[in-house]
Length: 136
Image 1 (cartoon, rainbow, N blue to C red):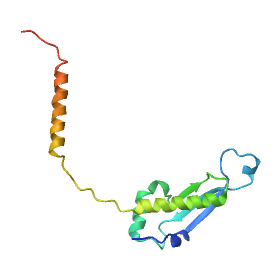
Image 2 (image 1 turned 60 degrees about the vertical axis):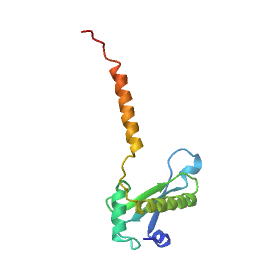
Image 3 (image 1 turned 180 degrees about the horizontal axis):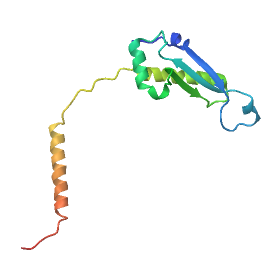
């Protein structure tokens, strides 16, 4: 099922704060850190199944209010950080909602089984050669 990210972006809320770390006089005046909040349970764009999948797979990034929280503070520009956190959000949602392919169970080939047995035999011979020789 395709997601309309344009509509999904309207459900995002942003807050800004001062970034940590050094930066001189400018750092004390400008709020460049951007925090993105997305209320998963209140989303009108996502289906119930998609919401459940996001809540289970991203439970470490979701708080008790069922909000997905992401931060970005790498750049000195608030606008750049906002754009980057939106891209990060999009990638995370796409990755989370991507359907995994079912694994088809396969068996080892005949050559692989023979090679494994040869390696086992060789290894056992090496270990047998380490034993003490006893005279009777």
